[in-house]
Length: 288
Image 1 (cartoon, rainbow, N blue to C red):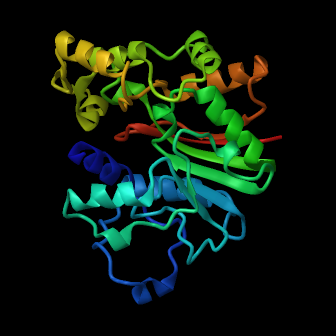
Image 2: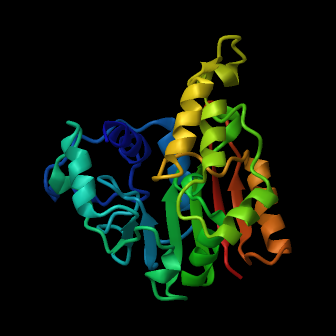
């Protein structure tokens, strides 16, 4: 469980509110905010390009540090695949947060997609950071998000670029793979995807990679035997991996392809391509 805490912390602990209210000082004490980083400023600039303050939105995976805080976004809702009790147990394993720091959830998704929990056509936007790559059935997830959005609504997403992460050796996820997972209605990563994730997983120093250093790309992180063990485990239980692997342009192309194949009607409204020295791109998909 400790490795999950590290993952949750790395995804959410540094996200600043896009429009932090001046009344923050009056809020209950919490963990000391991380210093603002260039990545945070880039994220904020992207989110601030849309006028969302008066909108009804939903943030997936807020954990202890939501990007959209209710002080500035009173209509925001929060959802997570895990329950608050699970997240509290996760927090107890570390020393970064306290149980009371966990954001109260409006929806606990479990193994359900958004449209099974949220009324259709009721949201102006849905937001998540580094979540979509973990979803076993990306087509169903996008369809669910589309259903809960109002016409003209936005899906805002921060997504890791495979060229600058431990996925650097992995092949791009194909339409055939997405469609096969969709037909199977997968609710957890299949053994083949888990095997690929751990087989190709490689140490990468993103900053050095952008700078062209020869030592930017390190060794494979798992032996073939260990990768096979994880794949066998995936036959019995959920193994958290990157299921969907794209660069910025590949993601845009896939969204266009999914539209052409009539899986979704979402279209790319804006894309901020991956830039040095970072490893993620920012994308907004709009419902017609």
